[in-house]
Length: 278
Image (cartoon, rainbow, N blue to C red; front, side, top):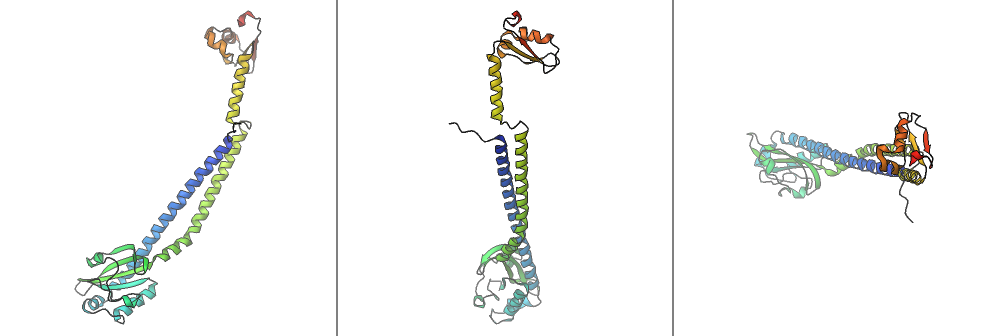
């Protein structure tokens, strides 16, 4: 048994629902990516601002340039004060060789930094998301200078990437609600359109309409008498296909319609024994 195709209204509704769902999903994903990128940029700038303030402390560059790293030194105490006050993941101060003078874990003081220090040591400020000994973080790095302006080390400040994720989770519910409302509006619109499509052609599907046309043609071609319908201008609107195709403009039905000036609903019938129908 041949399976009946889905109704046009159902097909239209399903197609619109799929399109709306895809667009809503793509929009939500794009919004999430853009929001994460913006949050990362903001946290990078925050880390950079903290690093700048540390590097501008009077005498810090001279102390790093001439001193030696120590877990109980003044540089370590100052770095930890700044870290606690700004809720940063770490505040690392290193000399020109990349040797740490401060770190969240005092055991790592005196060791080489875990990330590339070449940017700030060459006099450039650097912001990026990197993974180090304390995990993934948004980092800001600036050069550390002595009294003469010469670069003697770097200051690196990191903010835990988990803070970015937490902030993102706080902001996403609003985007989720908006996406859900847009999806609901799209589904509602699709359902309304499906109902209107079903009502306008008297509840008939396109396949049903095609069947009706084929049945009408079969009935017209199957009758012995000719069936002719003309409009108010006398133009033929319905006629047997065989007669028109065979005789064209010379068809008796065509000539008969030309003489007719009835209304659009009038129907002229020729009896089989009428000589004008042969």
